[in-house]
Length: 111
Length: 113
Image (cartoon, each protein chain N blue to C red):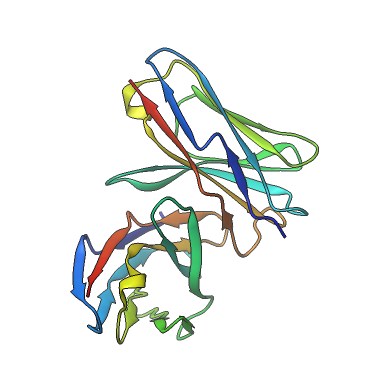
């Protein structure tokens, strides 16, 4: 079957710290992988995506690399800001074009 | 271009009642998906509609139903509400069924007392 597992939160970091949020997936075939971000009171926004193995998605200083051998898509940022405080969701779209989401990881960045 | 809109933003209902939520997709988008978001469960897929037809369905009881109109607007109905139905209900649209990217609305926060 298809599923996404991401690290449990909440995660609290100081400003300018390095961020890693782990995400692993199970899927048949060759899924596309996504990171979405949800700010308080809002819906989900696409942060970045990768559609095939070894692709690196990047946006706003965030990066994630599609690793087929480890079935992973870990989110990283070198220096977080207070404005990055949000909930982050890892997701996959399978070959049947259905989306599967992880449970979300809450990030709080303190000044 | 206006984004996905959902109404109402907040609802309070009591057990046993029914509720209808509305979603207007981005102009030109014909596919609408619904998700239930709860703490600890993340987003769980309810169903997807395209051209007024349900294309995919998640693993939810029959109390959850939906429909789509010819203008692509979609409604979701939950009958005989239970306490566990309290959640944020998110709607997402994409240009076509199975399109590569979803655009989410702000959600409707449903509280069942």
